[in-house]
Length: 76
Length: 238
Image 1 (cartoon, one colour):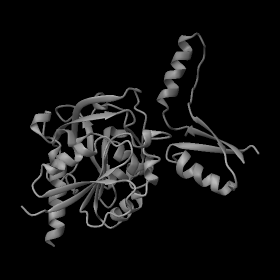
Image 2 (cartoon, chains in turn purple, blue; image 1 turned 45 degrees about the vertical axis):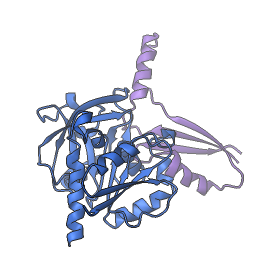
Image 3 (cartoon, helix red, strand yellow; image 1 turned 90 degrees about the horizontal axis):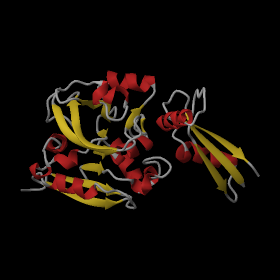
Image 4 (cartoon, helix red, strand yellow; image 1 turned 180 degrees about the vertical axis):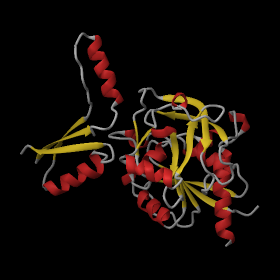
């Protein structure tokens, strides 16, 4: 099974790295930067896992539900 | 002097304040501090547990997120549930939050910088086994050294922390004023350390173990360990 997990800071959470990257974009001449959020993309290849198990891993290990949301996509 | 207290200092791969914590604790009369490797599964016989600072498992993924699954953490959780004192310092605080033994979490410092400096903390209340040897409002000078120390919790959790007097120390200036200028990392309400609802689990970002000897520039960290020792003695006297 191949899966991709995307972990993003929750909308209400300040993402200082995203803010800094946004400022750098403005310095490079990009106008009208409204928001930049930095998350993680995690690619997984695993034999014999089921989707429920992967959701548990996403919830318990790959994201911190206090401040992050995750999206699990099964590719194959 | 008979041993009054036996403390376990948990060592994870990447811990780097473990021997500092051990030395600080051993400087108190009657305290025996032992390093316990994270692959152990029992903490029977220990009166208190220290999760020291460092970069457990390289802090990959998130700070503390892998350490919370270490074999020893089952015993830490069981001890915490049984009322044993557990203190997490810096990375130890992050691990306690990831493990759900303390609410909220620690995020990247607001200014993005790794802050390594001595600063001031105000003791917000002394009704805890970690602050009872100090006075409410006392100002301590204790160093910090972290890149991810910005305390974050949802509004309801923050309300509960305040209502239950679980916020034990806040960042302040030398006079004890809790102000945005005295906040080194963007922590909500200048929070530097909180305890659990049961008050026997305490996490803080500053490093009290680094100021337990005049040779190292200060002794303001001793009050926290002194409080723990007195709390254990009181329990044993019962």
